[in-house]
Amino acid sequence: MKTSLQIVIPVLNEELSLSRSVNKLYESISSSLTNYNWKINIVDNGSTDKTSEISKELVNKFTEVFYTRLELRGRGRALRTAWLDPDFDIHCYMDVDLSTDLSVLPTMLDSIRDGSNDLVIGSRLKKQSKVIGRPWNREVISRIYSFIMRIVFIQGFKPLYIKDYQCGFKAISSKLADELLPLVKDNGWFFDSELIVLAIKNNYKVKEIPVRWADDPDTRVKIIKTAIEDLTGIARLKFGYIKEVKNLLSERN
Image 1: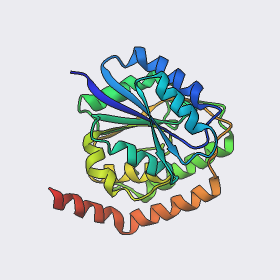
Image 2: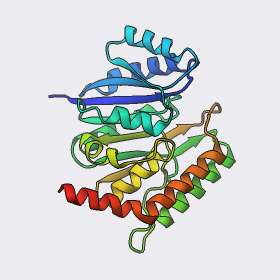
Image 3: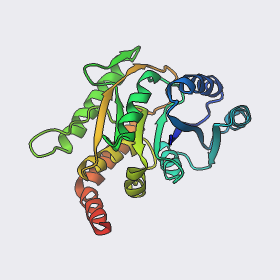
Image 4: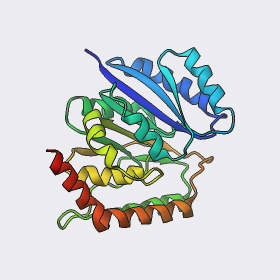
């Protein structure tokens, strides 16, 4: 029996790249993911351009593509909403620009399917990773953020072992989604970081794998605003919420 898989693409005003990216993704996974019953879910965070119309055209073109419309924005909100769908064994997501080389996707998914991992993270910051065209300032900011996360959420006497928290290429088991996602509070860019920290601190199996990644010059991330939100999220986790989640999960068991 094939494993059911949901591939989520969060979008906000992506009329220029959406059709091209979904067609490319569809062609790639049609041959590489033959062991999976997969669906592509375009999750629209309140787009005001032609993203909705283009999404519906793709739904009509491909039976494996469906469309979810959310009026409220936030990548975290989009992922939580989609990943709580009980009809799938594994969930993953990728940025609409497909910056990450898709060749690593089968390896990522197989390690969840065989039970080796609950959460697998694509990483641009491991030694074996290959990053193309990334501006030096974004690279520096990513490494500083990684350093802060690893030191703040130290395990024993060792820094947290994950290096890249924000790469838009991750996969998660339905077990982890069901148990932990309802407890992840952030609805924006810090969602990924919060999910990773809470998963590790509660002994889920989390693995980081190197990827080949090409920078998208059209990125819409607002660095200052995102940094402030991230620091707020880090403080919330550090000063109480990690312990609160541990208690909630232990009460369930």
